[in-house]
Image (tube, rainbow, N blue to C red; front, top):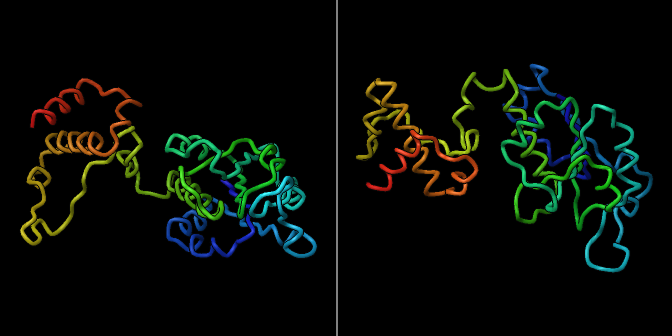
Length: 238
């Protein structure tokens, strides 16, 4: 997978590119990341990249003639172009699963007041990482890249992502490790029992407990199966 990011602030990605997960993907050639500084492809000053909006208003808008020449230079038939904008569809785990199979993703990170609409019209889709405002699309680009890379085979230990939150429309069960007792707080005894079936049941029940408490909306996305329905009854009767 190749990921190209079009940005005005490439230095924001320095720390991300040095993170262990990304470094592992790059060294194994599982992913290729290309951070492209829009400023390098535009002649003149910053005024040739952004301008005040037609019709008036606050803020600056990134010009289409600053971004589209760069996009057209790297875009191929295999490319999937994404504009990162609050107006896009919310990024969820199913989106990550879909995008991880792409040969070439191009992420366009807007900044300031936003992007000229003609840039957005060139995208294959628009994505938002949540209903809040950021100063630009660089952080969303990093969130999406991290989410995709960790799904690629050879990055995480086999099977380690299967029970993670949102993979099965449920929150992940609580995790514990050594010490077994710390300041009077004990690890649940079932996890020390060695009984794999009891551990499986405990984890599934606790996953449901957390989902019911913090994200009950997930139970509407995937209807509980018979086993989950029984555990939900038990939780409600506790």
